[in-house]
Image (cartoon, rainbow, N blue to C red):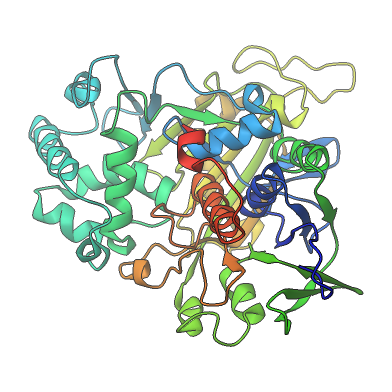
Length: 477
């Protein structure tokens, strides 16, 4: 209501234009609210973005999602980008071990159409990177995982490595299987990961339904999805988007509404969604909004390092692979998405008219605390020989470019006990809500978690305002 008692259009302000903020803004606008989204950066997409480097379009880091990520799949559909980030027909992960005594050895983690857990039984039975006894022990641990409730608070205080040790997992099994998956999804090694989050990842991704872990990734630059298409969707929904605008204050007014000070403007709002990182949220929270706001400062962060190498020829025929026995974790072919002209058959050069034909590989290095500040020249000396071990064709190739992108606060740290620190979407201040993958989604810091947080914050706001809305997870499914 206005000051004179007449009805006015409900207005919501979303602070932050990452995936969580864009999701919240779309959900609120789709339910009939007038929405303003304010983002400090000159683009949308948060920490899943692209930039130009010469003639290349480069993603700041490799991002993937799984078939079980129903909320992120909703996001892709909503912005009209699902066809640009397709899923594998069936899970198939090549895993190369370069430390094998007889030279590099290829194994595969793949599924069949059989029901859970038989869908992975054949792959596990023939997985060459584990002994027969280790494979059997993995099967027993997987069955034990299937019986866990990831929401059980007791699991949050246990680290994943301790649980694996109690269930007979060898150091090799942790390296060749559990951390192979866990480091990429949790951004932490088993000793540093909450058992609650680890159980959620493995139970949902591998033990819920046969196709749950099928992998999808953007075949175009991330900016095409999370910035260009997202902006188009916001515009079509009637959302006012303000970029390059920093929010400096969020205050409650005498009539129970909110004032958001953004740059030189001040927005009046019936609901505010803070969809920014935890420290920025802490700085903007009005007094009394959370019972213990300093808990937000106790949620740590974890880095991800991405190493980018451009060769003068094709050196890899697969879209991606994972590696063992080397510092290299995951390698992706980003040639087509970047706009680089593809070289000839593996090991040969086939230059186009501009002389730029080749192949562009991106190495995704999670849990990168030990290397996040390592100079580029040191990383080059360390990783180019490792790529030669993994990909013999690189030994005859010229390295045309080598560069690094660093996200020092890529995710929240999924350490044991983090669950009790993650706040719910609804605060103690009516009309103020929180979103972000670091909030209490039950998921680790993924694009899926970000979308879910945006769903939850928008849903809470719509409920408080008496606006009907579909259940977000039912809609996402």
